[in-house]
Length: 94
Image (cartoon, rainbow, N blue to C red; front, side, top):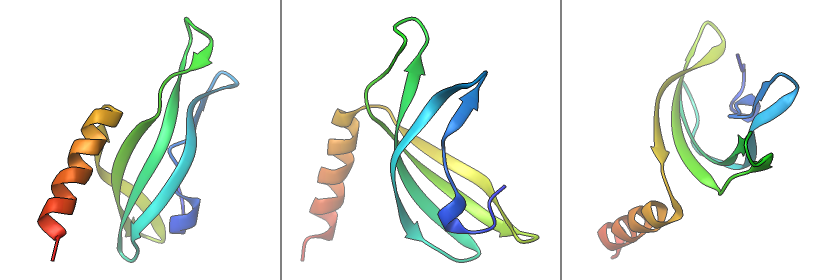
């Protein structure tokens, strides 16, 4: 597991194939509890290609010097991501 927030990733390899490819990440908070949002793609074995962009928000807790994932929220599509963005923009307008 990761000792620093910068080492956290959703990249996953199975049988020599990167089945989850991390495209980007933004650290939303650091400390004993860290929150990170990732942009990633899943490998489609049938098509032998990566699928559309996906997004996930992960919460990690640092225990015994290592971050452990405690929760996650997967954003299923660009449309859902845009809906979340719209709601947050509306709620945070001054």
